[in-house]
Image (cartoon, rainbow, N blue to C red; front, top):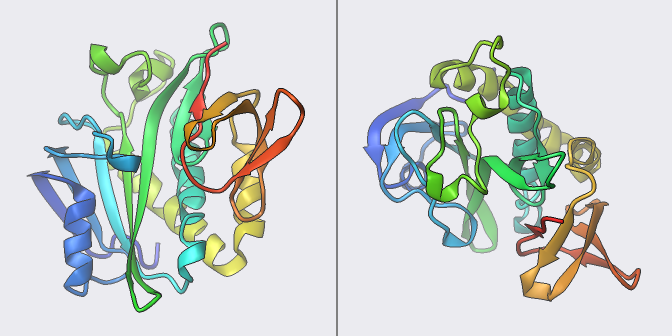
Amino acid sequence: MTWIGRQRFALATCPSTSDEAARLARAGAAHGTVVIADAQTHGRGRLGRPWASPPGNLYLSTVLRLPLPPQDVPAVTLAIGIAVCDVARRFGAPVGLKWPNDVVVADADTGAIRKLAGILVESQCHGGRVEAVIAGIGVNLVGPVDPSIASRAVSLPDLVADDQPLPDRDAFVDALLPVLETWIDRYVAGGAAIVVPAWEARMCVGLRVRVPDAAIEGDALGLELDGALCVRDDTGVIHRIRSGEAEAIHP
């Protein structure tokens, strides 16, 4: 590693690591500053959804100072997703990626999709220029997950074979940070042409999705080079979804 995690803030608890990282960014925190909390009281995912944040899991946010225009920031999510997916696989989890920001496992028998990790990327902009990107990562490292979300969430111990060693939070972070740095640097250097094929190679295949904002339902095919999701509806028309949420539909 050359830049990520050179400055780290470890908190017992906070409302949100992303909020804390955003505060540090406004105060001038350097590129790669990392905030980790044992627990969050108001963790959140995309669209303001609550993210259950009991002790033991990974709640990490980092300040990124990237030379990107605002329109190129969303694809940072793809680069981060690749990193989280690869590290989870390294520890034995048979996970894949679901657009735009989830690391998931698909049940081979039922088709049910359950989330292991989520990513939240937010920007601080001024005068049309991106001053900082705040990237938040949540990973369910300890189990079992709360019964109220067990149908849509999963923990690392649920996915790993009994004879496979399980990482604690620090071990997962130590494995994640260099991979995260590598993929962010690759995106900055090579753009979507580097990241999109790598993301598609890890994509959960055969997903049927619903995009509520666009009133579209169909089969997820892959990504455009700008990171848009391609969905083929039942009439054969291919729609390009550039924003919003793609909900997995169980067969």
